[in-house]
Amino acid sequence: MRAMLLEVPHQPLRLGDLPVPKPNPEQVLIRIHACAVCRTDLHIVDGELTNPKLPLIPGHQIVGIVEAVGERVEKFHIGDRVGVPWLGHTCGRCRYCVSGRENLCDYAQFTGYNLDGGYAEYTVADYRFCFSIPEGYPDLQAAPLLCGGLIGYRAYRMTGDVEKVGFYGFGSAAHILIQLARYQGRQVFAFTRSGDTEGQEFARHLGAVWAGGSDQLPPEPLDAAIIFAPIGKLVPAALRAVAKGGVVVCAGIHMSDIPAFPYEILWGERILRSVANLTRRDGEEFLALAPKVPIQTEVNLFGLSEANQALDALRSGKIKGSAVLVVD
Image (tube, rainbow, N blue to C red):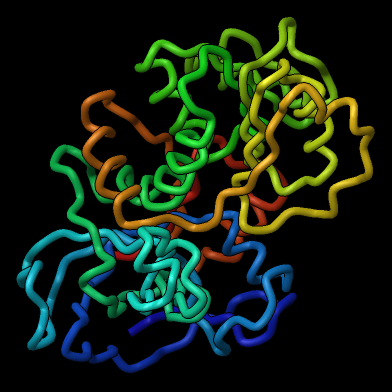
């Protein structure tokens, strides 16, 4: 099978030819149709997330068809369409797992990081961590839901029942979650790179009541803010933008250092918190909600062998919506 391989961080991926993997008793073999490209993939390739499996096939927003099943697989059958997310395996025994917080499992394994992922023609995945894809979503449009959607949804839930929410960074996750927020009657304020008028117009097109640069304050105080961009200096900016009692959620797995900030912008019972990974419950809830909105993803297509170009486009902020590798 063809696969894009990360052999050394800070180096481009290499197109290789590997044997098709064989599923163990609790895995399914998936012929991949599409894999969305995530900023987490960039963090791995650029060496910001350390100690990945090497060589590694990146990618953790996978959509494909089951072609073989292990002997203990109970949920899926040959021919089923499935999605594979970032969370690939947990121990099920640690204090986090038994308390319903499997996203914090000390022994978790992650697709496209500890486990080979979706920048390939085939992959294997633990069936217990795969999802059925809702009908009505083509493969290419479904792929971004599996991380930008799922982890974005977890971050969105952490804001609580608010009226005015700000999104710092208007990429894949934000363009998905603004649709859910508008469906639920919330007002979204979008913050983009300074001078990114195209991105701001895209946000307004999707229903943002205001869009501006991340160096600006919104026209009125926010109830909550989600920081999707991996930029630490946005934390004090968001704290200044939220009203007393507001919450700021850091949604990324990696962020540059947060600069020192005065206590007064945290005071007033403002809350600063992070979101780590996802649970299977997050996935089930979000994938049930998505068709009701209905959430529509805007995708920028690349061939499998163009994975490096897709990563470069994401790195430079040239992707509007989501980048997706067309594998099949």
